[in-house]
Length: 302
Image (cartoon, rainbow, N blue to C red; front, side, top):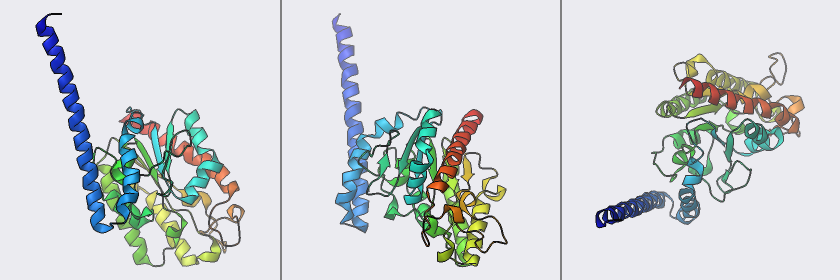
């Protein structure tokens, strides 16, 4: 090797080292900026968030490495009802068998699970740990970064994003509250439109046990679920799909005294709104297939 070749080789190595160093510096600055912003709102939360933010950023390559443009890198944001749906409904097994990498994110303290079902040891920091409609609106209003320094940026590492509120969101007490739900989800849809390289699965909230709600609120919950599945919400938004979890679980007979509430055969106890194992075994495969179909149809058309 002549001196010129050796010099060029040294220059290339120097450029690579410099690039890695600049990336690390940018990573540090973005992370520090996110922590500073958090400290202004809740100083006590800084240490808790740092314990999750740092490993999330370090693990970025592992997560995004499965996003190869085939829409097989899936994440499901949920709380307890979604966790039971996965565990008892065989969702992860179905998705894996179909060739998908299925991640899921529960409450912030436990955070993210990898496709093998193991906790990774960090969360994406969902704002307020709130997946009710107002919380989801706050989540989707976050600024996005190339690093997972907040909840939305973490979710966007995955190609397919499914998300839901839990059953308390089905207590819709007034028509004005129903309209507010719709307004929040229109705002969420605007953000989803801005990310055509992702598929979004919007899930309607599950119904409440009839003992803890009333017919008017239950009827509004049904109306919201139907609106999320309607052309009014979906038409013209090709990367947005809906899985109507409410309809899957709710009593559909309008003449029944339990109309629009959790079906009798799906109730675990007298006042518990968590769907039981029978419900999860019935609905889990339907949910998994809906995600698979949405991802494949969008991949073929995009």
